[in-house]
Image (cartoon, rainbow, N blue to C red):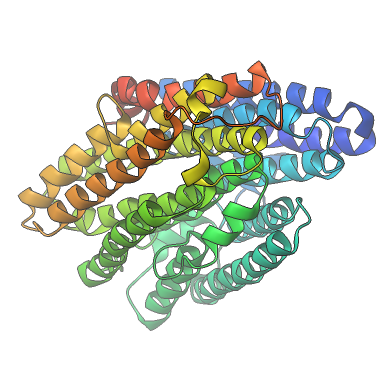
Length: 476
């Protein structure tokens, strides 16, 4: 019987290999591999829902000598979201790159990135997590520079170098833990970890390196130019998936490895950085003159919300409160992943159709691209937090926890961030629905519009309505 965890990693890797060997069939092989990988990931999620968790030791080698894979509810939820988003991106990319020379480079790099993401969710070894981070960063930077412009190459070279700095900082922390405890297995190190200078230094290095890769304020400066200059399918992947992987690891290490070391002061520091990100990112999105920059700064704000959960989780009075906050964190992260992918894909359609993404000159977009504009509206509503989106429930739980724990200062941050999000989304839609003529430069494809629209529907309706099954998946 095939190992479902190994299969989830192998599908996109086989896709990259087959496309490299048969480049003329890249798009067809890409869609086939995307469907296979998505079905495999959904199979893992359903299996975890039934059994609680899955583990695997590759090649029959026992831990710690062998490579271990593990899927609990948290990993399975992200694995399912990532593969659904990646399937939508693949369908969109088959149209977006159809007549571009970049398609020969896009598909292998895209499936290498996909392989790294799937392996990251399932890895249980601290060094293997570093390997997935490096593969993810290298392939993401190469994908971001596919347009070949001076702006994109410069932005993604900066992203590559800073990403390497974040990965090396993380690796230094891993080295400290290995020297102290003689193991790299996440579960074994967590059992042995004790407070002390080496453990505290490892925690600071690993969380700090991942915060840089997650673009947590004020380490976000690389994100807007890198995401805004990349091709639309790549921007969708970078914003929806890549930065999400880093902030996921921050939470995973915080809860599973450093729970006995990370104190309330450290959690509050990350929360304050998150609150600053919400306000700064939302304000910059409101002021943005280009649609892709608006989306990129919005990502900075959404990552900030995820960081704001940490001080509230640390202050939770009981296990039930912590579990409720974890569900809210996952709802917010999943909704953002789906919504931001849809937003960037729809933005790419608008950019190709009009020849630009300047917000002030988007008049008539609703008439020429109704499905893409509707996707922008739905994705924007999910980012704002309108019901019944997952963001709405997540923010509601976040506000309740802030009041219950006496950390009332998060409430005005959440409310102001929501109002700013409302402002930049409605500013965009107001321009799109004006009747100024927009000369078409490109005839879009219904398949490309449909992928953006379906992801927006999942973001606005799917995650919120599936909140109970998601909570069951997380064991709550």
